[in-house]
Image (cartoon, rainbow, N blue to C red; front, side, top):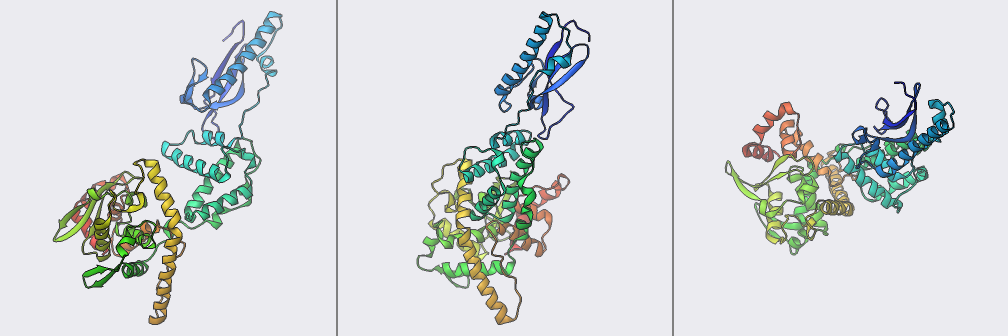
Length: 448
């Protein structure tokens, strides 16, 4: 297009994608040819208003970006007008030559995380938000220059995560987020090299949560220790040891800590966040082929998959624990972890997470005591029973249940149903057949 004066526009360059998924915003001069120069800013296509030549409301820092790119455009227009007023011939290169276009690459951690996560799914953004808040809490800062994040900072954060009693897999995933943001800073030219080049954290934190589990013998030893503290048994008859029922309903007591782990195993490996929200009023007692079951029909918090929790009243440990909690608990929840917490999703998550972190050491003391029994049994009976890995956390009751279920002849479809996990769409018709209470009951009885 030939014109008698230069046309100056702001455009989004669609054919170039930056590392964060955004596209650069360009200054375009059309006059006896065409030349473009980056403004140093970028945005996503859905946030670019082509007609108004600006970033739409809703994009991070949209107002500041619009002010900056608008000024750059006006500076070039003013230069063009000055050339024309003085009768000086110009080219697109001349109009852009004096424009000091410096690429704005803010090194603020907050800004980098905002840009890096802007193209991620809402669910993934939530996990980043949680990490972001925790990392700043560790640093005791509201923001930090990413240049200041050195290897000592990262190792200190790793130690901080260890002190919170998080599993190795969780620490590894959290450090991966730090590594990702530092890699992004390298790509943006803010730092030359990521400190992670000098530390392979994957070698230190290499255990996956599903590699940690307690075998059935270990679970049985823990059940035995629990009953010894709680009741005196005579066949199927039993009565409480003095004061034991009060200890069981106290969320700070070590007896409740062990009971929580065993209940998690008994409740088909139900995730802690779901288990803590089981309500007394939602429980039903159902008869299946002459066997009574405690039943909860719920939806998993994470997967939104419907799951039927069934505990046979023939399961002695499960029956004793549930009956005790039903008789002596006064709150709306079966378990006391959430007593006094408002019905707010984030507050519930925080309360459960804090309780698990604060009582992991107590749980591991139980594991140590169980190992003493297993070692003594191995010596006395010349056996080689597996010891409990003392790095196990509360979450390992889930993998422990899954391992035991499969070893007892269960199949993956049944396991998906019991755990409340989604399955491949092509298998859904088979899973529906397992959702009848008779099918779930048969699977649960296999584990009693």
